Image 1 (cartoon, rainbow, N blue to C red):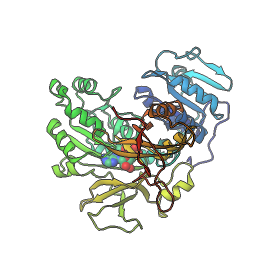
Image 2: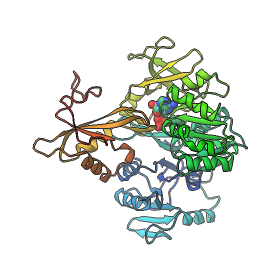
Image 3: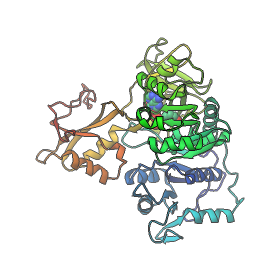
Image 4: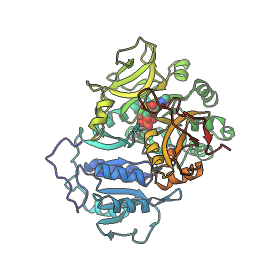
Length: 503
Ligand code: J2J
């Protein structure tokens, strides 16, 4: 949190001021970078929502942080983000401003300044003009390196997502060192094919790393080969970041042969485990460009390095960015395991957080007494410090790089009148690595809700589409462990009936 109390903070009605929070939900477009830089310089703290987030999530971020404003796209991929922002603005008492970027006004009043009760709606153009008029205003140099630069979102393991306070200094360190490790310079061109608001696409080295190095960012609406390959060819793209499912699609695409992709120097794959055979295949198709990236919005980022032996690039998730990154691999009692043995990854270092945003109880579980972050990942570490992710101890589903907290989805399912209880688990998926399965127990006397009904229910509750389970099953009871918790390894106590048979 802001470390100084001497500076001015928001009045409830005026413009956002130093230390205020602003929820930013923008697609990968220039406006996102512009807004982040402007807020960063002003000491106003963006809360980075992903474009996929919907009302429940955006409202939660705004309410949780007491946000004074929302910055949103107009209509994007068929979804009216401006309407969502206005809805959230009306629902969350702290919100005084909604700023809509890009595109034609989505609703009357958006082209100008629209006072709706307490919430003023502006276009980003208006804000730009006002900003120019107030250039060199009082907050120009307000931010301090140890101030929070933004709140990132945790992949999450709990019923509500946790927010991650990153500081100017720690983010800059991670970005600068990542850019160096990845060989970025003024001649680099980076294709942003993943959401830029995500920590990976923003900082590892991501858009911020490229801009720091003086390179060029090529923004793509998505990573499908037809669009992405054409952009690589046209802009002589040198670097790109992918998640494993997208990397599989690229490697299998017949379009590879139809494009000149020879400018590619670094093809990053991270966010979820890349299997060794998939890694081999990528090297066959894209030559010696593969770089594995294992990172987390909480801090620690690991890369394989240019010149690493092939077995390291194929078989490990790299080593930490910084010599000052401390890594412990421990057993269930926090005792270090012998080198090469699997254990829980704990880490502490110059750009890893020591606590979540206003979540002391969660912090007590997520950090050791001496400040190591419990990543929830199971890894092995070799003699050179390279880590291989071998599993996960946290209650999270990694759906092709998108993180789902089962507890969060279960809470939504339990809100359905026909659902007595629910458990959401991951199961292996050839393409995604893992997909989400919901097992639901119907309320006695109620008709068991079918998969399509539950899917619709979840969407109507306003959660991101990627959190909606891929499959639903109705069970008579959920198995429990000896201490009465739902047994996620064996969640169905009774024979399962498919509520949603797969096609
Ligand atoms: C296995 N699991 C991985 C990998 C992340 C760079 C890259 C990724 C993220 C990210 C990021 C993995 N193999 N290569 O923020 O800056 C899983 C682990 C980890 C969790 C973090 C970055 N790369 N993971 O994915 O905060 O379980 O960050 O703890 O979304 O993703 O997720 P997230």
